[in-house]
Amino acid sequence: MRIESLISLSVALLISASTSAYAQNSRANPATDFALINGQIHTMDEAGTVAEAIAIEGDEIVYVGDAAGLGNVIGLGTEVIDLEGKMVLPGFVEGHMHPTAGALIMRGVDLQVDSIGGILERVRTYAEENPDLPIIHGYGVRLHLWEDGYGTKEMLDEIDSERPIYLWGVDGHQAWVNSRALEIAGIDENTPETVPGFSYFRRNEDGTPAGWIVEIPAQLQVLSKLIDLNLEYTEAGVREWLPRFAAAGITTAHDYGIQGLGMEEGFQMMTDLAEAGDLPIRVQGNFYWNDPDIDPIPLVESMREQFNAEHVSARGLKINMDGGDDAYSALYTEPYSDNPDADPAPIIPYDILNETVLRADAAGINVVCHCFGDAAVRAVLDAIEMAIEQNPRRDRRNVISHALLVHPDDIARFAELGVTWDSTGAWMSRDPSLASISVSRLGEERIQRYGPMKAIAEAGGNVSLGSDWPAAGYISEYRPLVAIRTAIMRQLPGRDEVPPLGGEEARVSVDLAIRANTINAAYGMGRDHEVGSLEVGKKADLVVLSENLYDIDPSTIHEVDVLYTMMGGKLTYDSAAD
Image (cartoon, rainbow, N blue to C red; front, side):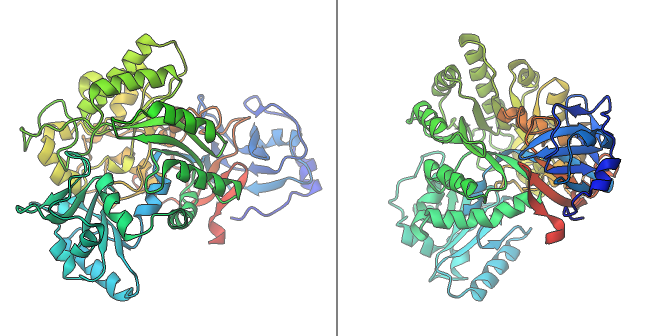
């Protein structure tokens, strides 16, 4: 299906000028650019309106309703798109992504396989096929493959000891390197830990680095010595991935932190892409804060003033509270099942968290948070509650992301405090990583409460889907249709024989899953007045799908094709052009 036929005068005259009762039409303009007709247009508005036609002028929706009402808004210059009964949704809004960091990480060879031998074979083949590369780069090493210990530098030295090897873990928060990489970076037994207790080098008994790096500060300490993490390097990766986002139907992304480049430099790069017409998604970013010695409020305020355009903006404060369960760095209200003595500290001490959230809220700054464990979730909810009690009333759009485990006592607090719960559907399954690492760390009872999307929604909370791409527990996945499918089924595609995580009662409706990746995610960003639903006056962001998600077996939703994507009234992806 191509969008290339111009409407003829005879066809225009056949369209009635009458407007149906349910049509939304605030203006009559014969210069409308596009009219989409004969579709199943699920607007995702509050009433759940399903229309058959939509008209677009410039970057704005000017009509939503039935075909008869189009007579008031189209003319000879209008391009008419016959949807042939296809489904239209608002462009997907990603509630949590890292477009720039992903472009840094997702380089080289894809290592998302389920065996250590398979990883080593892929690295070996890649190294042999690319003898002139100065660095052997890969991504997606799955963490559940090691029952005891981690990959060592010696394992990679056998593949190549002359060139550095740098392999990103699938979570984006760990890396596996060879001896040459450590040597070039100057890391040895005398090197102090980058951020003690949080970001460090796993070591042998004699103190020498073993070849495994934990968390981004230490990872970048090494990687920055191996390659020039400059603007050109990052932009090349961003340009490679942006078309893939558009092809997946994504039109807006909530960037939870720019890494690799300086944050100002990263926002400026995205701004330059937008001004050149090369940015097919709207990007709303945050100041990335994981250092309690830095006061982030003045920095957020400065960035908000500097980057405040429609397509690229810096608006909030991203707080890193804890790590993950694999490294015993997630914060839980109850001890780890397999290591009760583990006592991780919050990345941001609680007193500093409370004081900073209070000041941020007073300045009108919303916070988003990486909160993996239920104790981290509770701490941020407490801080937000304190800010609500002490500061004047305002339109708050705070978000707690991941929140894979939420204490039952805190489920209702999301609605009570107006906090959006954001997570990725692609993690809401009993994948091999969760079935090995997380079950061991937390025990079966807590695992069955993992990803409480349905419970929070039923308690009145706003639930949002965000991929956290490129980070993952098992599979790095940016496509909303995969997240929507997995959130509904609580099973990953291809693993339907595995019982649904939390049982069938944890499954959510198709409608809730779609809303979580459209209007609900837009609400969490504070952009629901602009995007997330197809309504008059909103931006013309939409995606056309080959099947109606409401009418098919939900287990096949990930197989549905994105036919084309439009952002701001401009076509950003057309499947027929591939």
